[in-house]
Length: 615
Image 1 (spheres, rainbow, N blue to C red):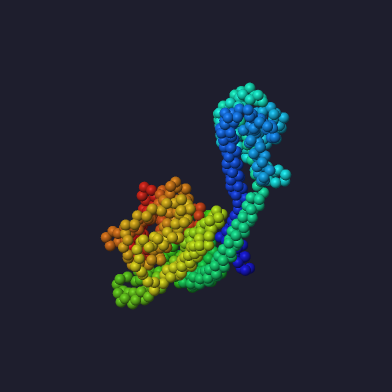
Image 2: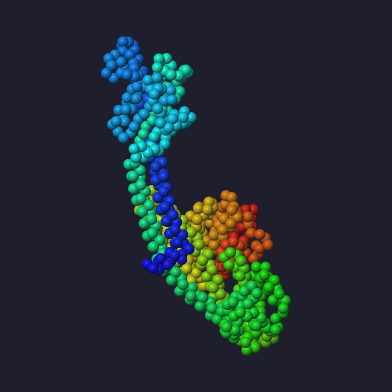
């Protein structure tokens, strides 16, 4: 458990997830009541509106049926606001509304009130409260004739809903315009807002239920997120230990078999491999902090070093041959690849060099063709030596693969994060169910398995016992999009597929998938970096003769012509503001051309860059 907390504290993934979960819980704690209270208020307003409509219908019926019949068949009966217990008098229609409001208020917690800015003289002394005055004013201005406000009455939270009381019956209009108790000097007409019917509804019970629901949701979400964090922390802990051991072994092999070194910007040595020391005859302590000039042979021309520095100071890769001197005075030849190194912010920090011992090849060149017999013997020796050199070259590339692992992990980890967010959103909108949780967590497990598979793929990259398999472009593309499609959708990047070739062919499927994934990820990075409007990535497959072709293109504007020819160089990267290593396209070209006997090229079209794989 202590290790899990340690990972949680240091992880760049889990700590943000944990923090976001806490903020999500706090957000839900305040957001759910606000949302539910809005629904409660909307529901109360609707119920209040319906109640007012029922009262108005009762009054309309009273006017049209009761009042009309009484005037017609019982003219001796009159209408008055003082009607209770008085013989020969019936209540005015509005008086019935007052009476019904009083009855409803006594029988329930909901209170009804009818009031107006223009009361009859019998209600002239009625004093309106500040809310009632405000309600009359707001209802008159409102198009829908509704105004509501939360309030505290007798220590309880209530919602006061004021609904306009319209003139909807001719009888009411005539009565109000001619009645002896009127206190206004204008005439009413149909459709006028005569007054306000107010309904006061308690909210305390609904609010209490709402808070209990809120607490249950928040606790459930936080509990689930904590379980997920603990689970994936344990998974990452196990993979971290495995990866650490693999990296140690890989670096150990690299250090023992590859002639490599690093320098600062001034050319002072900051790292030398064990193989470098073995070939040069110096100890690590003797080389560290010194210039490479201490192994420079006097025969080497100064112009060669001037050309090298001129190239690498322009952030380009230099490839050439050096004749070096050993500590005992002997010499050896190497073919060197010297490249600039950059930190995560794109700032150049120094230079790295990987060398291949070509002393035997140089000796052969110097022997001359006239030494036929000697050449024959040397050819056999060099055949074995070439095999060793090839292995050294492959081990050198394996060292570069360390950077590629981080590059290939980004997308699955983003997919894991996206799936986790999807679970949070489902929970937030109360649509989370066990089946969906199982499905989402299965997807995360699938992404995690892909991370593990990626490591195994890279471990197997240079093994000679890899087996080819029959596969089609459709399956390769489907497998890759299964990892990156969610991220592309979240970034509003459209994926266009034009699949014209569905035939199967024999190749190293995992390696080709890594290349396709790298091309799609590079296209995504360009579209996001340039903030392209309506971005898209297009994937096209077709067959041309005996060749199977796949193209990945985008509308990111293309690659500048002055760097197009260097795009596949090792350590060359256009990602100035990102973690570009410059190894992705270099290794992709190596995979396609050296391992799959294919071809990887790049060109520009009217929209952007087009990468073409030919198998």
